[in-house]
Amino acid sequence: ARAGGSSGHGRPEWDLLEAGGAELDSPGVGGQDTTTNSTSLAVLGMSSLSAALSGLGAAWMLGGIFRGQQARLVGGLGVLVGVGLVYLGLRLRSTLLQYAVIPATLLLGAALVAPAAGAGTSSLPTLVKDAATSSQILQPPIDFAPGWRFIIVLIAAVFSASAASFAVTLRRPRLAVAIPLPLIAAGALLQPSSSAISTSAISVGFVMMALATSFAADGS
Image 1 (cartoon, rainbow, N blue to C red):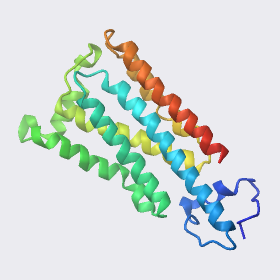
Image 2: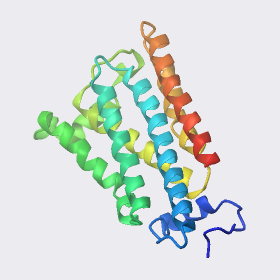
Image 3: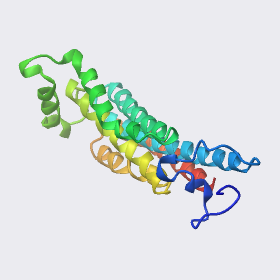
Image 4: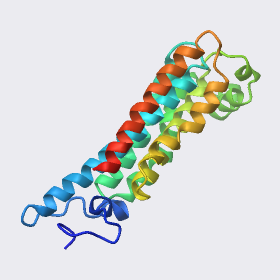
């Protein structure tokens, strides 16, 4: 039995998360399996929380490129959807939920753009293309055009979901912090000078919290 013993990796709490958390819900035997399962659930939860915090840091930084706070809200929504589906997929042993991140986010992005979308030049593909190819991105802050809703929610969800998934399946909690960092770096280069310091400080704060949580996950 795995409970009470050690695997070749010497980390039974990570072994229980292998293969999508296949043994997270196994019954306790003499109280030992229950304790180990509680630890593995804690690792899963903290790794997911670390990915969410790092993803929120990225969403905050990217949102600083746009006028208003709507971009940050949309990015945060993407983070919650991405990390949430990965967490539930691992917790419930459902690969379907993990693979549903992109389809679910595409539907969410389409729903966010729908109020502004129509036929012809205001169709969803056109709005997304116009946002992605706009030269205004080099002159922040810019308007949060409808097409950006689709782009930001998708990027935030994919990066955050990848961070949570790789951190758990590869048993490397620090990946939960590292994977969203390129988004933070890219966003930092495009920040308007008037808000660059405050935006960067809050984003770094999220990353620091994510890093602390990842250390806690690794030490569980």
